[in-house]
Length: 218
Image 1: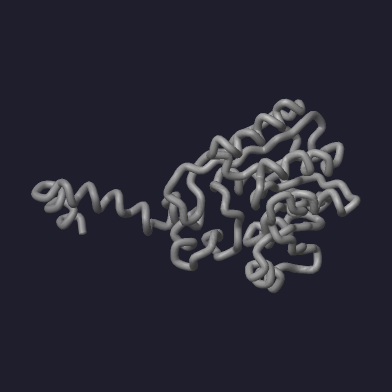
Image 2: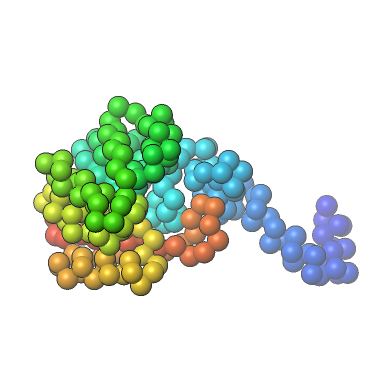
């Protein structure tokens, strides 16, 4: 093997360099392997190296949430999926609203007893964003990762517990940045997590909005 490497290095330097870079795809200690990126490509959904579902957020955000979510927290989620399974294993209860009926039926088969899954069609001036306000409850964590994200922000703020935080995913468009402005104008502070996410090649951003004495200890 050492001789072959020397041959490539001396006579075909381009292939030698390419071969070294390709190790990122298969070496056990490479970032793409250890985060589950390669596994996610194979199975078609965001997961760890062991195949456990994770949110479709960047790996920096996922690692942070694994550390800070606790079993005494109640979480509400706009947009259900693999993230619902992930969150349900880390917090006390998850309430998730889903606008796609077919996807709702699929997710319902994957979640446990501590998950309340709500189907609500998303229509102009409809009730999708308002679902959280009909529950007569407060939540320690609200995840905005579904439809009409900017419109969901005011309802999310009103449903937060005193220690509540908001997780706003994929703040990339000018439209969604309006949601950021609303939160900052309401005296929230934010911390951004950027990086690679499962099955994506672009840079993604997840932002956490918090105030004093929040449940994440920020």
